[in-house]
Image 1: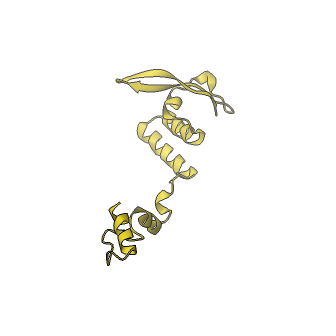
Image 2: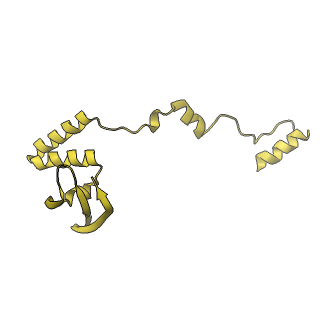
Image 3: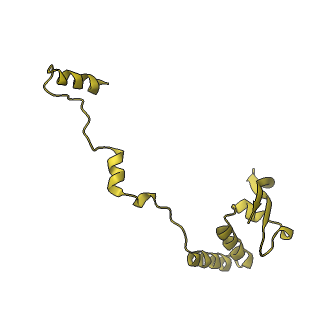
Amino acid sequence: MLGTILGDAKDRGLLPVNVAEKRKRRGRKRARRAHGARGLEKKWASPLQVLLLAERCGLLAGREDDFILIVLTVFTGMRWGEAMGLQRPYCRLDHIQVDWQLREYSGKLERFQSRPGFHC
């Protein structure tokens, strides 16, 4: 507001200079333009990177199930709790039905209704 008042006074010839005038091309917008869109890119793992990560997790845990769980969650877009709550009768090669998921509250796993009608 002070900048506006002093700017009007300068325009009318009452002041030689507006000391509260904002400099142009300063602030966040300029910093964003200088960096471009590089900071806004989302990083995604390639299919090879996903398989290598899943293989390493399976080897470190000593369980083949961990390999399958990581590949399943990445390529289907399931949430971790939904993948942990899958039941064998609802998993087929061509169709996966997710009715509920597991969530942890106060150190205990509880069963909650998942996204309605979610199928992979």
